Length: 197
Image (cartoon, rainbow, N blue to C red; front, side, top):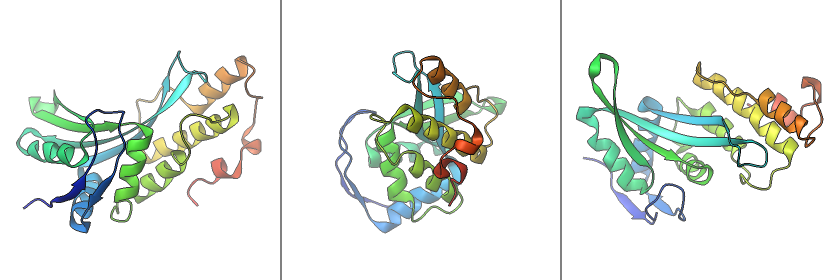
């Protein structure tokens, strides 16, 4: 039997809405185990021509299942009330499903909710929460670059091979706009040099 939700008050939609979720301990532990086993946390640098700093830190969480287990993804979406489910053909033409939640605020709140119960991805959550601790808007150019360096370090936890944008790209872009001085590794703030403490 699947754990039940005590109270859910998330409006429909992926990016909007105030999140207030109260779950019993069993439900939180169940979802945390699902994230540990069949989920991923992503923090990616994305080029955005419409953003002042030219780049965005995109935060998302995804849960995966094969077709026969896809009903659990619909149950998860019912619990959180946000995000989307999509299907794709996997290796050997088996149908795979993923449930994805995108956005700083939603991802941060979910990670805080599950953090006490997660084991395998505890380091991921700890570093992700450091990156997402301040609002996306209102960062200085240097603070944004510092976050991008942490995103680079986060990617080493995910063993990502498809990355094409790194913090040095953001730093170079902001340098051409005269928004930030050129820095060296020795000048980086303590939070960037030692993110896991």
